[in-house]
Image 1 (cartoon, rainbow, N blue to C red):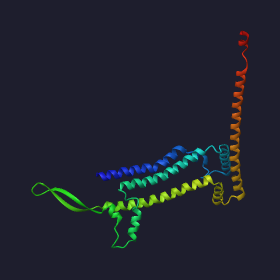
Image 2 (cartoon, rainbow, N blue to C red):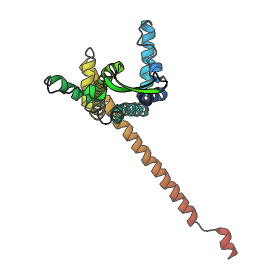
Image 3 (cartoon, rainbow, N blue to C red):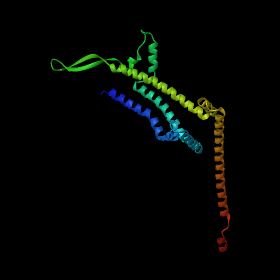
Image 4 (spheres, rainbow, N blue to C red):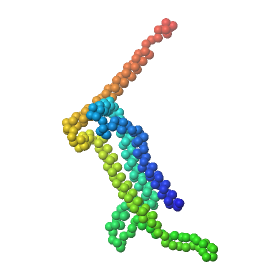
Length: 262
């Protein structure tokens, strides 16, 4: 096996591992929790009574554990960010593998297709040559090794150039879609109004006043939790201050045994 083919196989293996890493991390962190919470409600084979019971259990669980699953969301956002970093890193890795020719490979192919027949130079042939000079050594009539130069056809490069031009466009599409997804996450995190609008857009059969109630409840619940945490901090600080005052009072009291001895 040639050294170039060994390097290509190592790069392909490394790329496959890097692409699978964000999914593996999320599956390891999530541990089937989402599927357990769904309780097979997406299948629709259960009866109506069983479905209502499962919905009630799910609502009770979500109500009792409100604001306690933020860490799962943060992990999911980290996996999405790792996916974006992975795609961009893959493009730089391929660019280094092709000596700086991969970053503009797709643009060069588009420019080549739009250029005139006389002036254009095929970038795919430049990176993946289809003909090359080969040197053969064989035994001649005299029994000595003779050297022969010839032109060799590389039919595999015809397939390779199509594969890598597809990978270039695929990486670009993945980069754009992943970037838009991250911007979407940022917007729905910091914009409550956008969350309400998306709820209306996705669940059109739900009444608008019900969605408004959910939005107001979420906002009031957040304020209530913050208020409870603030009061808890004040209560703990007051307890600490009272303990310190009691300790100071005990230190200020005179020692009767010492006074009698004097």
